[in-house]
Amino acid sequence: MAIFGTSLPAQASEIGQAQVMKQGVYQCETPGNALGKTGIRHEDEDFTILHASVYSVKGGRGIYLLTGDVIRFTSGPRKGQKFRRVSENFLRKTDANGKDTDMRCVRAVMNNQ
Image (cartoon, rainbow, N blue to C red; front, side, top):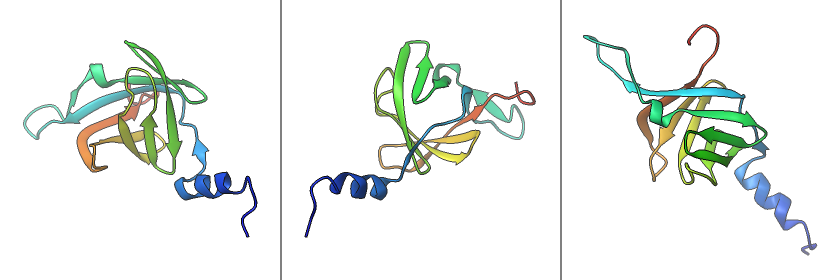
């Protein structure tokens, strides 16, 4: 017998508990090659995690949702973009089918700026 109000927690458990990302600037690049740079910066893809679930880019601010290892920009200039969290400081942009692309974004910390 179903009890009203219990379906929301069940749905939330199916997608995982919402989390937040580490604050800071995420710098994005695609792979280079052995004869040149190891990475090709794409500053137009960079974004900053401000607080709670808020991100910022040159074009404005928006909200993201992190569940499990999937980051979805749900509003603002990047609405619809998705990333897979490889580690706390490393993200891989995914395509519309959820497959990894070449774009990677790494949180800038003291040793990689």
